Structure formats: C-alpha cells, structure tokens
Image (cartoon, rainbow over all chains, first blue to last red; front, side):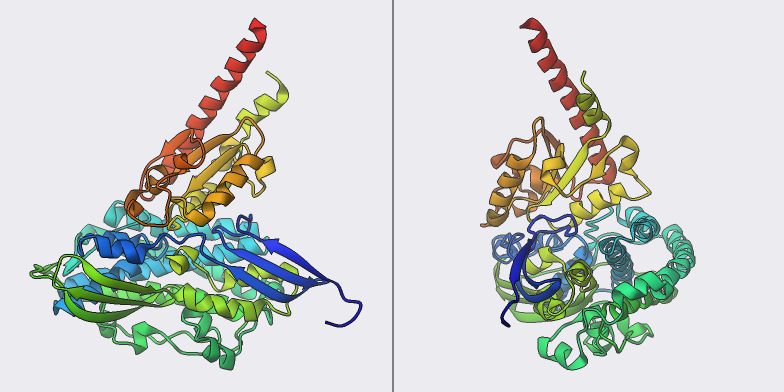
Amino acid sequence: MATGTRISVVPLGAQHPVLPEPVALKLSLEEEKVVDVGITLGYCHRGIEKAAELNDFKQNVFLCGRVCGICSHHHTTTYVDVIETMMNIEAPERARLIRTIYSELERLHSHTLILGLIADAMGYENLFMQTWRDREIVMDLFELMSGNRVHYDVNQIGGVRRDIGYDMVKKIDKGMDALEGKFKILSKSYLNDPTFKKRTKAIGVLSKAEAHTYGVVGPTARGSDVPEDIRATGDSHYAAYNMLHFTPQVEEDGDIYSRVKVRVRECFQSIDLIRQTIGHMRDGPIAVRVQGKPNGEAVARVEAPRGELFYYAKGNNTNNLERVKIRTPSYVNIPALRYMIMGEEFAEVPVIIASIDPCLSCTDR
Amino acid sequence: MSIIEKSRLKSPWLLHFDTGSCNGCDIEILACLTPRFDIERFGILNKGNPKHADVLVVTGPVSKRAKERLKRLYEQMPEPKLVIAVGTCACTGGVFHNCYNIEQGIDKVIPVDVYVPGCAAKPEAIIDGVITALGKLQKLQEESHKKKGAK
C-alpha cells in the first residue's frame, strides 16, 4: 500500500437490493477503485447431495430439480441422464426431442431473466420491465405444456412424463414467432444503445488466457473467446442435439458487453433450435419401462443456461444411491468474479456480478 | 385513522429475503413487479431497506447461515410488521425436509402471518397473500384503536 492512501471496506450483502440472492461481498476500496474482494458463500446451502442419498433414486428427480428454480429442467435432465447411463437405458427419440424443447425454452427464459437483471443493475429499469414482459410468452408456454411456470418436472428415468400435443406444438411455433419479433426490437437496446455500451464495454474484462486459468464455463467462457458448448462439443446424447445444426456463439473481447452479446445471440439460436426440434417430431412412445436398480458409477454433462453442469452418481444395487455429486456452472464461474471486479470502479460491481449470471442456490446446493 | 396508518394500507413496502430457496419463488416475486402482474397497482413497492419496509416476504427453508440474517432483518423492521412465507419450503421445509442444514420453515425462526403454498408459488398466489396480509394489518389497527378508546 502506498503511503497516504486509505483503504475503506464496504460490505455488500448478504441482503442487498441489487442481489436477488444472498451472497456477502467485502469490497476494499481505495477511493472509488476496488482493490480487493472477499466473497462469502453458503447462505443457500441445504445439503441436497446428502438428501439425495436418503431418497429413493426415482424420487431424486424432483429433489434435483429443486437445486435451482431457474435451470430446474437441466438439473433433472442431468440426473436422469446419469441414471440412464448407469442402468443402460435409452430414452425414446420423442422423449429426447421433448427434453430438447424444454431445455431451449428454459435457456430462453433464463437468458431473458438475466439480461433484464443486468439492465436493472445499471438502473435501466424500462429495459428490465420490457424484457420481463416479453419473457412472459415463454412462461405461458411452460404453463401450457406442464401446468407450472417454474418447476415443470417433466423428466422421469427412461423418458418424460408429459407429451406435447399437436395443438401445443402449434402454439409453441406461434409463440416463437411472437418472441422473435419482440427480441429483434429489444436486442437493439442491448446491442446499440450508447448508454448501455458505456456501462458495459471494456468493463469486467476476462481475457482468453485468464478464462482458461479460471476454467470458466458457459456464456462467461464464450464471451472470452472460448468456444465451449457441451451441446455442440460434448457427448450430447442427453437430448436430441446431435440431430440439430448450430454453432457455439463466441465473442472475443471478454467484457460485460460480449457476455450480453453472446446471450442475446443465444436467445435467437434457441428460437431456431426449437423450430428445428419441432420439425423432427414424430409419433412414438415418450418413456420406457425401468427395471432393476442402479449399480456402478456414471457421469453426465449438460449445457445449462449458465454453462456445463456435471453430475456424478454411484449406485450399490439398492433403491438408494451411495453418492451424488453435483458440480454447477456458477460454482466454477464465481472465482473469476474476484478477478473481474478488482481494479474496477465501485459503481460497476453490481453489473459485473450480474454479467456472469451467478446462481447461488446452484452454487451452494 | 392517522395518515401514516392509512398510507401503510394503501402503499405497503416489501422487503424480500431469500433464505436458501431454489430461486423459483424469487423469480416469481420479481415477476409480480413486472408489467404482466404489476403489483404496483396496489401501491406495493419492493424496497431493499428493512427500516423502510412494512411487509417481509421470505422464501426458502431457512438454512443455518441465513437464520441469523433473517432474525436481524426482522428486528430491524418497524412495528407493525407482517411476515409472508412464500413457497412450500418456506412454509414447512417441503422437499428439503430431510436436509441437515435447514430449519424446516420460517415459523421456526420468526412469527409468520400469511403462508403462501406452492412450488413454486404462482404470482397470483403471492399477490393474494399480500392482500390477505393487508387485511390482517387493518384488523390489527382497528383493534388497537378500540383499546385506546376503552381507556
């Protein structure tokens, strides 16, 4: 520390208007510049991994969905995938297509949610309200398809629980048309607005080398020129992604603006993927019978809206699993947050936090 | 009825706190504030400061770490205050009932006035919960007036 400079410590959280979830940040400030950050987690720790050992392996689908309310379908998909791999079950094609539709709709709802919150964090309330108004189209589709807006619980081991009828498919198609039109207007505000650019360009920069060092995943990695997308690069047998055509959306700069740009483009990509999936839909069974008990070990990887979601499970030929390990994308991205915040102005901190889309209920489990 | 009591009924301010929920109820509370449901037509605003808040909206099954925070937020709020438990896990612990790190419901830590069930609680149910809580507040105010009149 240079002589004459005073360091003041500002606590942010655990309860703070800008944070929808509890996380405590201890910011050391030198005038307005952040020189050090301490991040305290654990306010949301419930002990789901232990609870998953106490339940029946079929009940766990519902428990794993409740790890996170925003990406609940991806959690259940990863869990059923890990059990299906362990028990050598192949879900029918129609079930995998239905899973894909839910996954992409969930990505749409998650990305619009965080884009709105980024706008809110910088005080652009109008854009936040408009984004969330258009997000209701996706929520209506969820309510139509599953009966619930947040936890859809459509997955079961060996397939899905609910079919998507012809009239629903038509409504999804109509909804996608409406959403595309609205997003085209909204994306102008996100990508071309001079105020928005000023608050996001060259702020919270994570270079490609640092992205590799911290091992970040998802849109945070793709915003730093790391073309990592499990849907395209991984063993994407978990849904029907091997039947669809798309490329990962990558940006080079690594600042908040590139992460926003990646998310905006992924919204359009998701709309396109849903249309492709609907084109592949053929009649058929939506689930297969599950016999026997899980035995052995398995892993599964899924591209959740925030990045790579990883599950490990070990069975011992009983109804209860011996171990379930959940590694969530936010858990990987949060250490990089410290690097992004250091050296920035205090006023930029909420926007930087929102830009990596941290999900603390995922992180703490 | 004093002007403060009247404005408390006409424009209650919320304080939202997440005690380890899965985010499902939190995004539904946020959705309440946005144009589709627009809770502001009842004069309801979401404020971050416990010292300005009339209604504490709590989600989540109360993890051991969030428990102290919740107690402190409740104590910082001015009287009369209302607490709404949003979501099944805020009411009883729900799907997390056998987790080792949770308190199984808000009412184990602070007194709760209104329970809103549902996993996740729908925005309509949350709005209904807030309106029910306001009815309770009005009753409390009338009772305190009667007591004063009897004296």
